[in-house]
Structures are given as C-alpha cells and as structure tokens.
Amino acid sequence: MRQVWVVLRREYLERVKTKGFIIGTIAIPLLMIGLMGLNIFIAVQAAGSDRELALVDFTGVIGEEVAERLGRRGYDIEVAGREVSLEELDRQVIEDELEAYVVLDDLTLSEGVFAYRAKDSPGGTRVALFESAVQDIALENYLATISTGEALRTLIEGGRLEFESVLEVEDPEEAEAARVTGIALGFGGAMFLYITMLLYGAFVLRSVLDEKRNRVVEVVISSVTPWRLLLGKVLGVGSMGLTQMGIWAACAGLLLLVGAPMVAVQFPGADFARIAGFVPGPEVLLLLAAFFIMGYFLYASLFAAVGAMCATEEEAGQAQLPVIMLLVIPFVLQSATLGGNAMAWMDWVALFPFFSPVMMFPRAVAESVPWWMTGLSLVFMAAALVGTSWVAGRIYRVGILMQGKRPTLRELVRWVKQT
Image: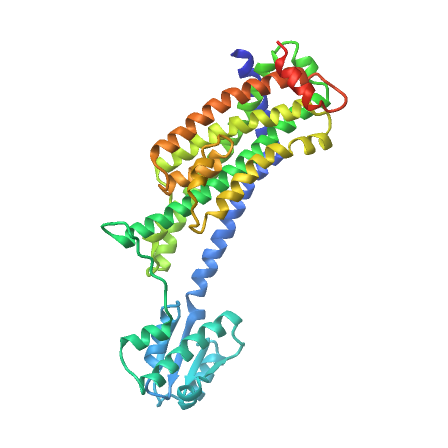
C-alpha cells in the first residue's frame, strides 16, 4: 500500500498546487460571496430611502389599502389627504427630501389611472408593481358597489390549485412542504453528483492520458504495478475533489452564518424558517457522501480505462462518449420526473448501478421509495464497483503501455482475458 500512497500523494499535490485548482476552489467562492454580499447591500439600500414614498389620496377611499399593498412589497408609504400641497411635495422631490409621490384621484377609481411624480422615471419593475396594486384595488372598489363579500376579493386576487392527498396525514400542509423540500434537495443533490462525477472522472482520464502521451508512465511503471498506479490516481483525484468540496462547503457555511443574521435584521418580515427547511440535514449529507464516493470510484475506473486505451485527446473524446451517456441518460430520466410525473418502473431503473447516484438519491431524499431499495442500490453499486475495477484494471495494465491506434472491442476483450 506504500506505493499506492506515494501515487496518491503525488496526484493530490500536483493538482492542489495548480492555478486552476486555486482559482476554482478559492477565488470563485470568494467571488460568489462578494457578489452575494453586493446583492444584499443593494437590497438593503433599496429597502431604505429609495423606497420611502408619499401617497396623496384625493379619493378618500383606496389610499390606505394601496399603501398597505405596496408596504407588503417593501415600500414605506406615507398617506396624505386632500389638504396636502402638491407644490410642497414637488419641492421635497426636487431637493431630494423625498424620492417620489403617487397621486390618486377620481380618475383612478373610474379608469385606474394615477400619477407618479418624481425627477426620474421609474423602472419597468416598479411601474408594473404599482400598476398592479392600484388597478386591482380600484377594480375591487368598483365591483364592491355591485357585490360584496370575501368571496369577491378572493376571486379578484385569483384562484389557486390546492393539492389534497388521498393518504391520511396529520398535517397536510406540513406534509406538502416536506415533499417539496425533498424534491428540491433531491434534484439539487442529483445535479451535484452528475457534475462532480463527470468533472473528476474527466480529471482521472486526463491524468492517465498525459502520462501515457509524455511517456512518463514507462518510468513509473518500473517501480509501481499498474493496478496500484490506477488505484493511486483514482484516490488522489478523489481526495482533491473532497478537498475542493470541503472548502466550498466551509465557504457556504460561513456565508450562511454571517449573512443570514444581517439579512434577517434588514428584512424582519421574511419567512426564513421556510428557507431554512431547504438546508440539508446530516442524514441527507451522509447519504449524499455515500452515493458520491461509490459513484466517483465507479466512473473514475471507467474514465481511467478510457484514458489507458487512447493515445490522443481526439481519441479520448470519442471513446469517453459511452461513459458520459451513462451519466446523461439517468439525468434526463430524473429531470422528466421532477414535476411529479412519477412512473413506478423508473424506481426499478434507478437500481441500475450506473444510474443509481443520479436517480436513486433524489428518490431516497424525497422518500418516494422504501428504504430497502436505497440500501439495495448501494449494494448493487458496490458489486458493480468491484467488477468495473477488475475490468478497468486489466485494460489499464495492458493499455497504459500501448501506443498507436485505439484498440477494437475484440482487442479489449482479449486484454481483459489476459492473465
């Protein structure tokens, strides 16, 4: 195992010292944190003085309701009555004491037309928001002269679909929230597994191809057996991947720890409890780690075998297509069921070892399959890992020293059968 450790250490250090690793692992998360911090700063600023408006209600009817509606959208609206001087408000706007003010009059009640007085024209988002609020309330007021009641208000605000499960549950709303959270976490985890297995598997392929093309492997193979060299490469790249993900997770945790209280203070009305429900628990993270480790070794072995049997980048690009399709197909199938179009046969397809990381993990998180199917998928992946490693090791042992054209399928079978 000392030889494996030497190869692992070499592969790990070679990658973590590169500029690409440093930029991708440290600079990008810092950039994301900076951008998110900038967005939070802009949001806080937008929630301050530039949202402090006045509302002049010449109707005497809908002013308070319009102010309340806009207040729920983050605006601080001060309602003024008929006695206010528009000249005074204009002066305040010109001298930057007030950003803008809205004027509601009889035309607003009859046609939904109102005035927005400011030095600069409002953006499209603000126009749409103000028009929606004023016109809806004006329409409600008009229809209220014909019909009254809470049903009218509900109808005006728009209908909605309410899902009702035929299963007996104690709290349907909580059950539905848990289902949505499970779907979100499951698909997010599937996306993460898909990207990481493809990315780090490609790292293994490139490492094998570079050593073979530079003829370095001919020197290395004299002191390290091919199987140990393969295992060291897979473990080295995997360790680099775990290091990278660990740094990303630490950055995300730090951002959450520092940023969440600041945002909560600035937006006290936000439902952060609901957002916190989408943060994965320890059991979900453990399951994600299990599927990542098994899936990574499974696909890294295949990518290493592809790298060993190719001599150029062009050949490797063509030869790795079947391996990539083993990742793309389950991702497409999983995406098709994201909206709730569940098909029972897909649960059994998810037991296929090469599909399990992308398809079984989201099902396990959403609790749409029994626990024994999740366990069985891990067992199948372990068995497939043993078989794949054995086959990949045989191809690697012969192909790593081969030069020239890419071997045919018959030649690969002969390599595997060689003792």
